[in-house]
Length: 443
Ligand SMILES: *Cc1c(COP(=O)(O)O)cnc(C)c1O
Image 1 (tube, rainbow, N blue to C red):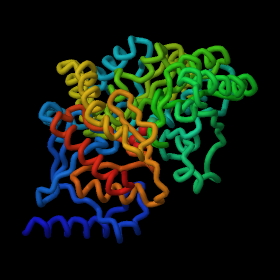
Image 2: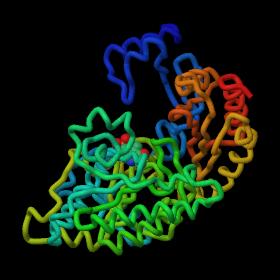
Image 3: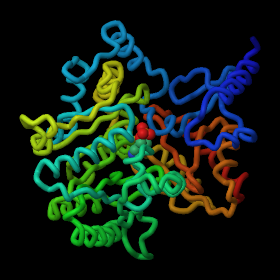
């Protein structure tokens, strides 16, 4: 069969058989789906050999490139040994080793890893655990949750309840538990002359007010540390996390760190919360945990919280489960991912890579239509000054024509490449993004 026919055929079958995520399917009448036949490193290829640079790490999950030889080989070995076994009443090596290593990555402050498959499920678990912990401690009135304005924690009903993105949330509002949002420390919102730490402290003041008034009914504050991804890569100063930690301690409220996107080196440190010198009470991880290979998520907690469930009485235990909890293949991919972090000294290497990408994109930062060019570790974002309501859609199409896989959020363009992006790809990304801006919004 001719290759371009294979592309076309796949798209036709996909539209007939698959309901694609986060998509108004009718839009595909005018914007074609992109067929992918294979991946290698930072590149994705269709059946004709057309290629796309995966600058968004396939929705923020890929860390070390597609079809990474080291992860592939770890998975092959695991596949010959054990594909899956239930984790209730049973255990296996990959899940134990991964749990030990993740606990070590928090300096031993957090542990007793509780597994699920997706980020949203990890958020559900953290919310339920927080509420249940307080209930077990004789505080059943703590039933409510605080989150930041613009927060994103996933799309299942519980996670959506603490999410604050109207496009995803408003339709389902009648189904959701009530939650409350406090101002986001997003430093774009600072007053003129106000520094990012100053603005963070001002927002912490608003948090303190909310906690002071309602701490008796609030179980937890959930935050995306340092970068709020889905609302458009809002970045904020670590001072907010220090203040939030202090206030949560003072008012006896749990602090949940949703590091589903920010974990595994994305913000420059292994976990984003490290930059504030704090530890949360619950840590939610997913996305990069398997290097972008397999669905896996996990919640780590403090020993004291684990102890609040440890009892003769069954119902005081955490009776939550998912069929694929702690899947051995997924855990093995995660272990292979952690091994690469150690072998390649990835956090240090990324500092150099990050500086190179920042230097290469200097002219984008200075582009007359670009506002708030910002960077945190391996995330770059900027806002484009345009009145075009179709900007994001036009940008996606024009980017694909230039071999770039980019998906702006509204008028915010961001780069979140795999940690194996090399100098030639960085140069290509910078040059073609510049071209795109000139073409779409002018000089
Ligand atoms: C992606 C994301 C989630 C949801 O994870 P899924 O695996 O898509 O359910 C939750 N929180 C944050 C911060 C995320 O970026």
